[in-house]
Image 1 (cartoon, rainbow, N blue to C red):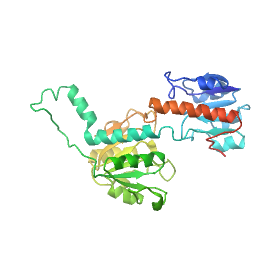
Image 2: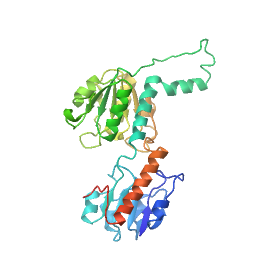
Image 3: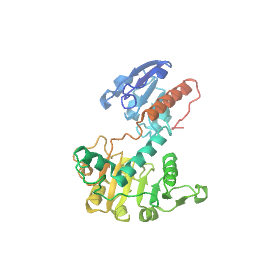
Image 4: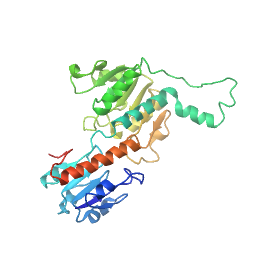
Length: 318
């Protein structure tokens, strides 16, 4: 059984172990793989593991031995799952491994913007506090989130847990979700997307990227928000129109934008968000805590073992 990992570096740059996979079969791990090299690198492989490397119909057509594609992530749009199904190739993903870590990053962005954490840490390295006449100083507004309205778009594993944390912090929680109101926990109020825009002091995005949600946050929808409201995106970069978000930050319509994802990754150096005021961008690391990556590796290995034993789990293509 030959197993090829096409882009293992982001999941395991060397601090974790591939031993669980080595116990299953012959393992070959590549840190990164260019599109032109995929077919050559996986020739003869029974199993492919990929994070971001695309496995298309054309690629699968050239791999007569391929039986299984394991996506080292929750999202599996990098694999042509319909083509795989038609060829009898099993495709699996790793669901819900990073929920706690993404929730943590969501609130890291919220608290950074309300408490101006990065601003004061930067200022004090240049001696601002040391030269203060008083025991403390502040030169920006400081906001308490208790009593604020938090709007959540999407109430899956992550959105639900964001809601629970927000309630513990005293926030009023509203959600745009396909779930029935009667099925929501006490304290989470369902509303429409338009209603959510108008009521939220802070809006956070946790929905899938689809044709309907592509650039859902744009000039028109941002204009429906409270002036100075905060927007958080730890979901998918293309949920927002980045040009429109940058423009809204400049005008003050948005008071801040905290994001861990961008439409193009890595982003272009001239992306307007990098020069926009009150834009705080982290490099898609919400999922990458050590604990989350350990879970990802463990579940991925369990997926492969289950497939080898003839009882595949976490199958996304039938």
